[in-house]
Image (cartoon, rainbow, N blue to C red):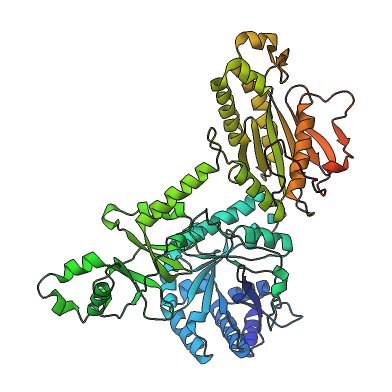
Length: 619
């Protein structure tokens, strides 16, 4: 009977605990270990799924859960591990077991494990009653444990659970990591979760990392912590070799990008038990301080309030107030529930949070945290100054007509994707016969054409998965990672081929062209406007230099422009493929082998200026 088997396993301590490291992607150190329970080797209960299912059928879920936790605590204490212990909790147990916090406190004390070293993982499955789950975790938090939501994205209530429970960690379901090296959409979903984590002060863990390519992309998305077979398999005695991460760079915000940490004022915090008189004295000693953060009087150092200088002094100016409050703790006069902003939050995210506060809560100061712990104060005035500087910097490097990213941003994006072995398709979009059109119709009309082309390109791609830049003149660059990039590229050239005709006068459209001067000053007839797109597929499997991509892109653009009418030619694995446009000349088939060595993506340049205006020395 399942009940007898489960009871026997629990009573005789036949459950085994394996530990799998969770690694800090930036520091290359172990944050902690997830405890994974296994039954006796070689039995049907060796895999946890059968063990949990039979325990549920036998009505022994709570007993099994407690036995698993006790086994994990014994292993953790016995191995004297450095780092935190991640323990799994079923939502059913959390909802039904009102005495869980008390029992857990006793179990931790018995194994001499500090509650602050424990993270309780609650799987998203079964968290549909988010408000009850949020209420159930409060006593566990009060005990000192942190809370994590496990398998985010595998159920139907992940974001609601995130909003209600306010976890310290979120573990993204392995679905979003598996195949991420072939699916740009999963990568962008992961980046969005990272952004949410940075705003809410929640750290993101990506589990299920099984190979180097997945690890590189996860790091590139800015994920805080990593877990999976690529780093280490679960073992009784866990191991982690930092060498597996050699050559992989964690994503860091560039200085120009700006984050909340750039606003940091290193004003020391005060603990919750500090007397009001001592706070007043601090303000008198430091007249430049306009506020002080109040943190818990414990090892967590979590902010719980803020004291504003002006409010406190006005409050204490009333008769008898000093005599009554001077000896009381600062919590009696602080403003509770202050605005907390994670240090990694982007400046635009900080701006949205600060300006979203109700008018009565609008204050100059806010609290900046790192991993939930107090880091310093920030001021709205400094935020405004940083945002203004950031906008000026972006404007300097953007095309003044179209507002698209300029040369520097194009070079940076291309280099990053090449270095990180990303799959993408680089495209050079060039307007055919634009110079004689400009001479014939004037620069104002030419600018309208450029704006129209930029809008069609931006509308055709999938931002922010894809990237669009304007080199200058009639040259544009697209870096595409969308799964349907080929359909988007085809739709782009088809729309431009038709819409550009509308920028010609009726007589020129009827004649199929117009008279103008060529580059040598001679008079000749030119066709109507069209577009030529040269494209290069970079598979990310083999190392390649940015300059080699640019050189291949230049050659493909020249070949596309040599054809009559609009065209799009793609270099894929040494072969040229026509994606759209006029039929190629009779001498060339729609798909031909391209044997010229200079178009191989493994080649290095011999120097020279790229006609796109991009320097070949980009890497």
